[in-house]
Image 1 (cartoon, rainbow, N blue to C red):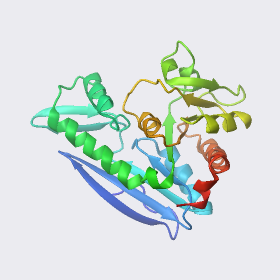
Image 2: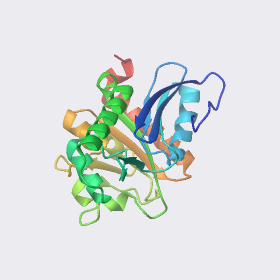
Image 3: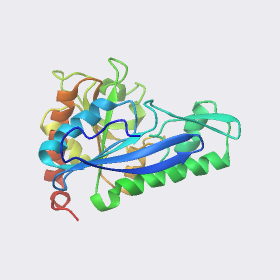
Image 4: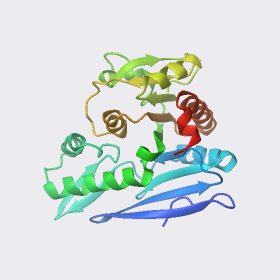
Length: 253
């Protein structure tokens, strides 16, 4: 059952169902109006992004794929009597799948690795970035738990970032993360918190690492939980920058 029913008249829904042993994962696509931007939310506890996306597509058209699996951040499931936990944003490379499973204290299991790789393939195929020409994801974070300063040199994710631009007038928890230099320069020019991923970023299996490996522009608009208006504002900025930087994307395939 979907976590978010249609929130306005005319919104369409379709669901791709995935079974991970005892965990059910639904990839619910919400769409409305003319084909436009396509959003992806991979964590089931980050609803501010979902609500901002709904507001955007209600007035501008587009779609959102929302990964729904019980309202938590991580995949939690069992296999052959053993419990497993992993982050659904760490399953897009083999290295990431293995590393994150070990991080949570899970023993290596070839069948589980294969299942997670199959799920990542299903998510990628459902979103279809190869045809779209980009990834556009939405994430949320907690107050002072994660933010733009996390990517500064010598901080937790310093090795992930090539460049960081900070607008001191913005909340440090609100930012746009990209893998493409053209996008980063354009975002910096409009004075928003932004991060450019390093070409040497550690392979954590995240969608941004996968996107960089495949040469597909990636955008993540990330804000603090509850900052819905700011999320929408940054979404609109990121879309303008994406279309200006890659006009062929706006024209469609």
